[in-house]
Amino acid sequence: MSLLPHNAFYNASRYRNSNSIKLAGLTGGDLDIRGDSDGDTHTQTTAPTHPAISTTTATRSLSSVSSTPPPDFSSSPRTIPIRRNNRLLRNYQLSPANLRFCCSGHIVTSKDNPIPFICSIFLVLAIPAVFFGRIGVDLWYTLSPAVPIIAAYLTLLVWCSMFKTAFADPGVLPVDIDKNAVDTFPRDVSLRHTHFLSLKYCETCHIYRPPRASHCRLCNSCVDGIDHHCSFLNICIGRRNYPSFLTFCGLTVVTLAYYTAFAAVHLYQLTQDTRVSTSQSFGGALRQDPASAVVFVVAILFLIPLAFLLAYHARLTLINSTTIEQLREKAVDRARKDGELGGGGENPFVGDDSNPFSLGPVANVQWMAFRPGSNYSHARFSAVAQRDARRGGGGV
Image: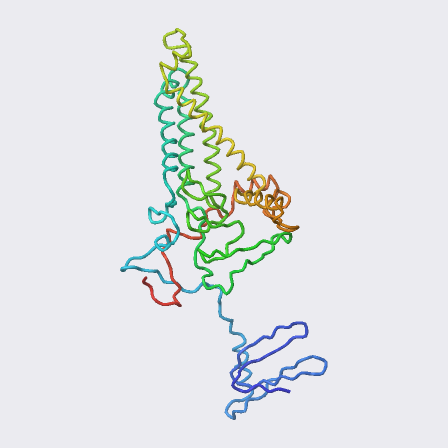
């Protein structure tokens, strides 16, 4: 028999079918814990040794303390806003990422070379300007007003999807979550009980990256669900802006095909010269309105590669994969052919059969169309920066 001291104030009870010990505070009794030879343990509360406290008082104390609910630790610790020079700071002002911010952190773009992005903006503005300035005006009267109206609607959709993709947070992960990690070895996690994935530690961001996240050296940040870094949009394509990127690619292909078709129609009308009821050669039509030929050629030049890009990402959508995972697959296959890998080295993101994230072609398309969590931001750049109140201080 072992006797707990009176000052311990614990009631320990062990159940036959449970290895857990339940502890409850007491205010007026000693505990006598005895173990029998058959393995059962009995707990007996003895009367207090203090002469002024009776057994009834101790029992009442026990019942009142036992009915008190335990403290709730589910809520987050209290935070306080961070200030600098008596002004509230936002998360983007403390971010070490290689990003530019505007409109209090609501607009995000990379600090990478902006020339490709400027060229993209010039093209999406110049081609429609030439189309509406020459082709649209003529077709309004010679064919139908619906032609330039539909073209204007498609062009507006292209602009909206482009700027939504280029200036949105792609899914940047917060930094310094595991800054004081005991070890930085990869951590294996099981996915769907069929694959084991390694969560790698990022030495730059000081976090364990979730599956499908990777560090972009151009943005100097880890991006969740990253597909690639697009220099023509000057931002990473990740979990939050990949749907709008697909929309932008699809709408651009449709709009360029529309421009090409009606530029050809306009050239044909010029060869027939319906306005003066005389016909002329194709060369004469080009001399009369070279803008139609320029729109036709430029639209064709960009339509072909963008159509291949759209087809490639449509395939990735069907198998629920990313560009980085496909490049990783090729690297693993190349290393295996060169003999650098033995029997292992299997890439868990190869094809539809072994991809743990694939749900089947139809379900993959549905998941992409209604992508869950695509509006949630980990970094929350526009939010007011907060600090754990337990660390003290509110300034920087």
